[in-house]
Length: 159
Image (tube, rainbow, N blue to C red; front, side, top):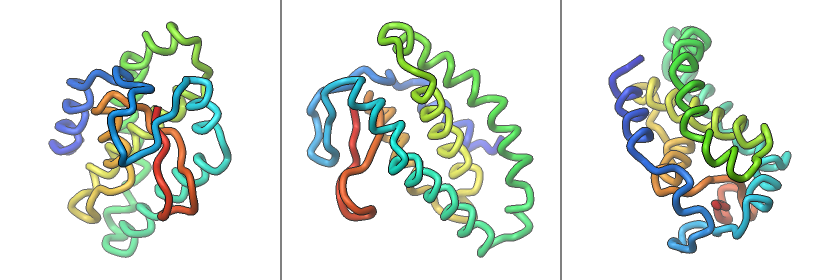
């Protein structure tokens, strides 16, 4: 993994994930008031479609700038997953147990963290954007889980 990806994971490691869920400490996003709401939003087709589109856009930008580098995408994903999957499981274990959160929660966090790292891996080709902004909320103790409005207009939903 690239040193900037390792640094990204270190920053995520130091943060207390989910320590501010439900706390209305920002006007930059809409703060939800329950895990039930958060899970409904992160499981929605709209949110999952938006996240998939963000990944597709990242891939397209990388292909436009360096087809050679993009050819290594799957290899890099496999390498990064070796670190991110156990990392995420460890970081979410307590909150999953405490609130009996469904598998879609883990899948959402795994996707986010993997793609934060993929943005870091390719930051020299295309600057981190969408997933780096998701990571910001994890670091702040929130869970980014939806969007209100027609993207890019509207607001992020966090818990």
